[in-house]
Image 1: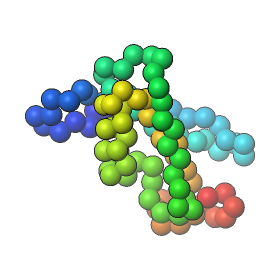
Image 2: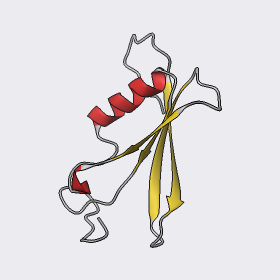
Image 3: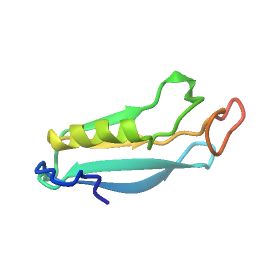
Length: 97
C-alpha cells in the first residue's frame, strides 16, 4: 500500500502489517515500511513510541511520512504498535497500556 504523492518521482514505499504475540497473549502490530529499491538484508530502524503511550497511534500521518522518508533512504522501518492508556481508540487501562 504506497503512500506516494502525485507526481512524486522518489522510490515507492510499501507498508506491510504483521503481528507478534506479546507476553500477555495480546497481538502486537508491526508496521513494516520498505522502499521498492531495498533488497534484503538491509539496515533497519525499530520505532518504539514514547510519551507514556497515552495518545496518538503508531500510524498517525506525520509518523507515516517519517517512516516513509527513512525507507526511501534505504532502511527497513518497523514501527511497533502499542495499546493506549487513553486518548485514542482501543483504550487499555494501566498497567497494560
